[in-house]
Image 1 (cartoon, rainbow, N blue to C red):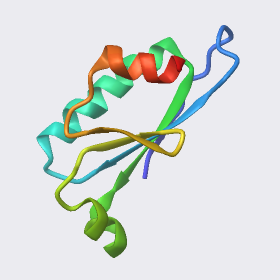
Image 2 (cartoon, rainbow, N blue to C red; image 1 turned 45 degrees about the horizontal axis):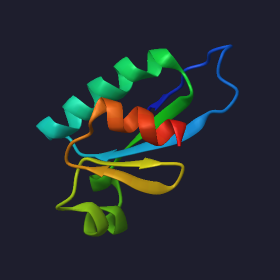
Image 3 (cartoon, one colour; image 1 turned 45 degrees about the vertical axis):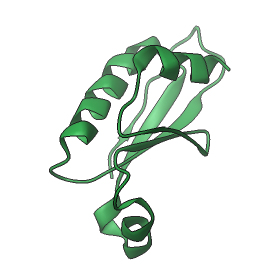
Length: 91
């Protein structure tokens, strides 16, 4: 499970973002690309978890990937809008 971390001097707070995904998921790849791009702004680090690596996760998220959690709260399912993501980080 790769952890992607971004550090910046201008950001005082770092949010925890978790992406639940699976191999072969096109929408998951799009969300990963977006998170990587937005990471340059700072303020968060993210971790990707493959739902197929754990039976409970597979049952919980089997029909919902990709799913993005921000600070433990479900924020997005299937698609993630960049501006809405930034608003949720700021809120």
